[in-house]
Length: 495
Image (tube, rainbow, N blue to C red; front, side, top):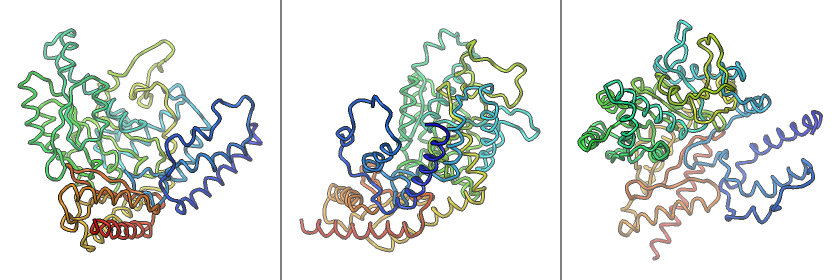
């Protein structure tokens, strides 16, 4: 493919993408293919000779498209949003054009410096404390800073590595030898609630520390008292607490942990405090949500995903640390083929030392495009629209009389179930009926959502947050929920 054909095919692909977005709401959001469907449709070896763009495009439409679950459909309410936007796509196109491997400043100075700039922009936009900024107001380098990770799971791993090094350094400062410090690594304990994302457990498995999972309270929140009790027990057993994750917007219910209370414990026990705000962190662009996040200014690290609810195509996970010393110290490995800039200035950051991989894409471009082309006002309007629609859905479900809300509706997530009093039967019958309702809604094909379990109780959890969704889509969701509930209850009563 030469430049002239690329111009032609590129324009055709943009048209194909635009057509997809114009029509995606007309098809069921969930794929219905069976496992292994694609293997039977594909050759079992790569082609020996070049194939045409037309043939590839035809296969996308006839073979790939049937196996796609359409996350960008306005009728997709599953898990949490995976926002895309045309400005972000344009930024990704520019990133693909440059195709850098930006592991340090020399690789492409603009890539490093733009990331430093936009992460400070974004930190200020969500109201982060100045400790997390890379550049101080006077233009000099700060102790903290932001870096774009691929996912919140990667962010968990790197901050837990930094936390481990911080704790081991403290033990050595207090007189422990290097050899003894290495020997106590297996005694390190990380603390999560039973509502913390599975990324926390995975990170602990990778770095080889112990995990203490603490039962959340009646509102599915991790509390100061529960954390203190767990730490006392572990310290009495000779273990070494070193890390705690507090969540701002849990996956199951969008609950908010006791951030201030947990910060108190982290301070007194010398724990690294990480705030996982992967979903709900985007809401902090709106000042009215910031009182809910009091305590994050005391954290060692804070993470949220613009690729969830802030109009930025996957992957873009924003991580800030208040002091990069332990992070860089833990992940920095020098080699002669990785030269450093002599007389490094405040803007010369080797982001390879802030992440697990060496190479990295120019992800800052798409975030830059989004923040410029929407502006702060456009991003706030995007968030507020979904919160308003979620509150409307909550009201409608309650007024129906057959449903109960299982957790406070604060952001765009509505967790509910059919009331036990409506279903004639025991606890198992109630759970089976609600689980069947999830299946019935998804099999209907007009909308897609997922269910969950809250301490053994089956519930439904539609998440409102589509980039292109309107109140009409939320109204359709309500309609399908009501219709399917009527059908499921009718069938249950005949059994």
